Amino acid sequence: MHPDISSSTGDYSLLARQVSSILDGERDLTANASQFSALVYSTIPDLNWAGFYLLRPGKKDGAQELLVGPFQGKVACARIPLGRGVCGTSAQERRTIVVADVHAFEGHIACDSASNAEIVIPLLKDGQLYGVFDIDSPLLNRFSEEDRIGLEAMVQAFLDATDMV
Image (cartoon, rainbow, N blue to C red; front, top):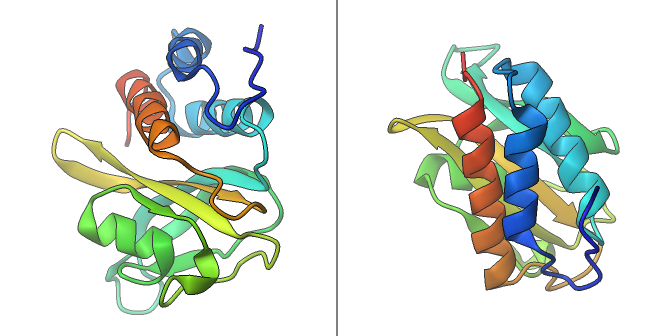
């Protein structure tokens, strides 16, 4: 059922179709985010975390921040302010960020010291930001331009299949 992903890039067009197939008929955010995280984590090699941070009101002042959502991997940071770390920067700037070496990223938040590379894709639907999808790898330089394009297509398939409220 899963593509043979022996390279770092894999068959992203097949994976995007699998996302649509797996999520077909279900629109719930929690269910789809859980399924999506499991699919990414189990089919793309050399990952140690894959999951969602969803935009929510902050605990203290109500300012929006990212709250951990469905994921696969070790325990993660629960809340991330916008503009902090790779996830908060991706959300604030509304763009995908690929980091070859997270230790060289100013303001990196080390939730897992084993992570060395990261890609974060903002969840944008109808012009509105809902959060980010975050993937970590223990390998330096793990994510290529092909990974970025393929993962963005997978996230778009997730967004198309999911009601974000």
